[in-house]
Length: 321
Image 1 (cartoon, rainbow, N blue to C red):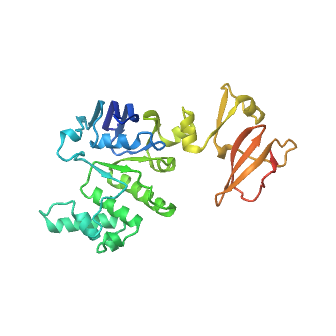
Image 2 (cartoon, rainbow, N blue to C red):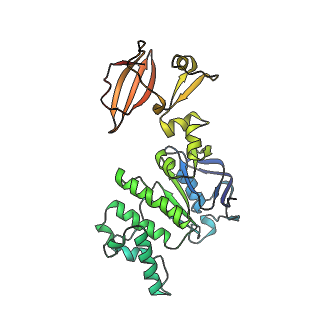
Image 3 (cartoon, helix red, strand yellow):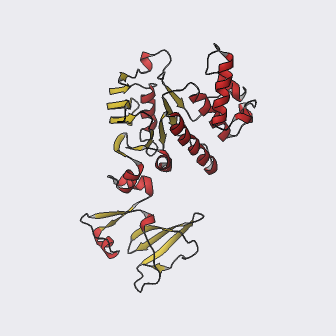
């Protein structure tokens, strides 16, 4: 049976300058060892919720607990932030002119110098930055700096690792590598990871559970496959998979029967045919994506998005079924 590590009950936090900013009446639980993704557009309240969990913000109402105990806010601690958690922020918080090993070792006490060095070496090897130990932070790439920041965050063996938009400064290749690092940490070390991201791909590829925020409200939660394939909200479907919606009578022309007034369709569900006699949709735009294309189709003012896995097969203006 899963053990709850963080519980959030009826939590609201609003900023006096903007009553629309923040979060409202949030209820959720996070289990020990889970990789959780909090996903939503900019301004949805993701970072506010993360800071509430860490204890660097205090709620206006509601209660947050860690292992059943109250999470103290910044007015209750000399140094804000929960002792059993570590936050990896977007600015990395590194000493730029110190060496890699110095940044990492700075988190440990000097009671046992040999053990301190050994533990730092093990963390650096785990994250593949051992060869960088004697380099100064200013000599490192953005991806290398992020690995150092991650090593610095986990060397004290926190129970919870908080990630605030961890991929925002990384290119596509580094994103893939860093995602693999995080997944390995979650599996090997058993750390509970809570990540906020505006990019739904981060949650879909990494998380055990996703929480979808919109305008400060928690509108949906569940396992990634469940939330993606059976979303309860139009917002969720559009955010996660660029879904489009058709009136039921238009969907009927495509062979789809539904009791609902509208039908949700993901672009990858659309199959195109150019051999049928009845060719009702015209290809308005083609966007090359490498091994596939995004197509925009139109018929009598109704637009459909489709994925074509055979680039070059269709042309703009072509009619298809």
